[in-house]
Figure 1: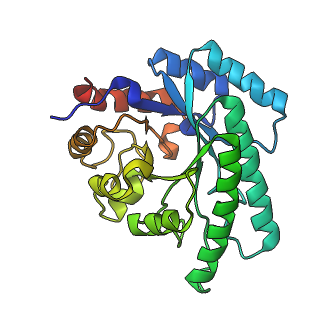
Figure 2: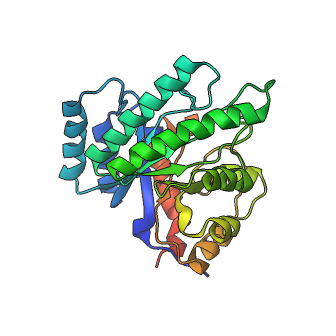
Length: 277
């Protein structure tokens, strides 16, 4: 049976939305997390609302609890952000938003910012939206490189994006932008929905594979481990086979966890415990 390090399991504040940011941080300490991924959304850390001093205050709260931020993930699916938007105003605003997010990551000492390609209208030519997304990502990759940040490009489900939802899509975009600041990642939900194999991401992306959102599903749902039916043991074996040492973020999105977010953390850790070294 494959094993992973307990320290790789990474907490995220998404399902702590109805609690203060400090409550989330305290929970991470209680459950012995050493690293977190910060979801950049209101009221916790939305870059459009916060000053530099506000962001530094959040960082001080994180440092006080001796936590490390491994990735900053600005909200980009529910908010009016779309790097492939046909409307120039929306696309320009989205690029500015991600640049602010890169700046925030620098302040948080986070090495990565999660980014998605956006989406095009379903009744327009895909290559048109693809070109807009590529142009936007190229600009952001240049900015990220200046700031010493890596962009982790995430495939979404087809209901969320008609641009990057599979490994071939991701590889095509990465190959078209020759930047050391743009890498690939995967979320186990789109992976499972598309019937893809986790090993394929390691095989095809190799050193350009930098991050994983590691959650259960049916296959959708972004559930706590144990609440879905994804092949956890198989995934762990793959991680062990490829000697993956990066973060495994518990991105728990289902609204069922909003009332008692700690319970979802407890269930996930209980399910994952047999696989810890």
